Length: 136
Image 1 (tube, helix red, strand yellow):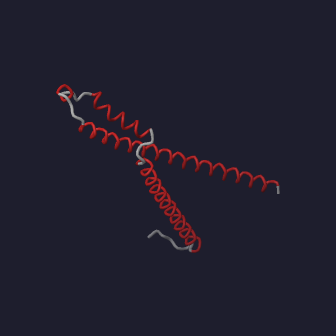
Image 2 (tube, helix red, strand yellow):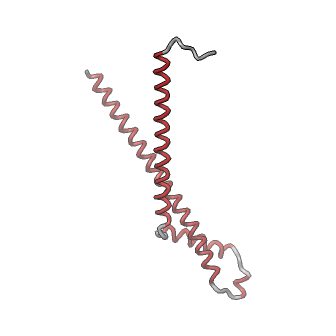
Image 3 (spheres, one colour):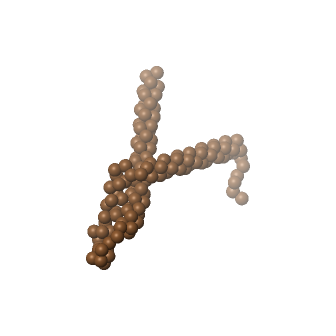
């Protein structure tokens, strides 16, 4: 009796650790998705700032300048705008990516279950027909 109690305790510990590991992996995926969505929003805002800068009239000295600081301005502004809350694009992108990720995960899990069912059926067939040989 004592052995079964210890085994069930070990099984509970394993299930808890496995559940915690899955939760940690899920949290890491969510953080990565959100980070990539923010990067995409930052790139979009960089392009918006570049387009806005082109509409500003320039004097003759500034027209000839197309140097690194002026090009970097758009990139820095895009990143700063995104970090300060952005325009909501990162949130929409991350929601969409998480939905797609969940669908892919569910599809993968269904495929795994299908594969397990096929393996079980094959094993049952082999057990019920041990005399049949598959070698020709």
